[in-house]
Image (cartoon, rainbow, N blue to C red; front, side, top):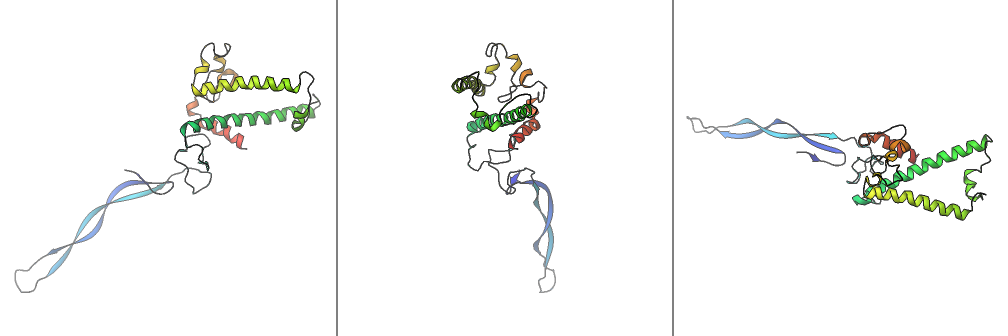
Length: 221
């Protein structure tokens, strides 16, 4: 039997050892009026336990992580001060939301660097990224761009949500204009396929914890 003692400790049973205790036995001589007592030493066995520290990194050393954050999720360091992940269903959705936020953040950084490179080298007269929102484009009005963005993002997010509710449903034939094979899903949040995973990284998604952790860390930075 294993018993938890405090944060990060595991008590495991070990071998038994002998601990001396005294048991009094009375011996009476056959001659004489005096009575003599002797104490004999009798060993008795008691269980011993060994305390072994568990190596679980947390966001604040010495703080107990919540029981629902057991370290199996990528980037899980036990940080949830508001208890948002207590509900298992909500926790699954928060995992997907963090993935999307991370990827948008990385795509945004890539877009900033790429457009600045074009501007600095003189290839294109693009505005600085923090002024791009105020620029009026000639090929379409701001209202048109907003409507198109809503339609495209709404379609993509609807497909993602449907795959979250029913994993694998969006990979069925005829569900995405015949491109299902190119977007072959690995698991919710990791669509894969030659279009979204051209280098074939993390094909074994169940054992790709290191790749998942690197992706989340890129967002934190």
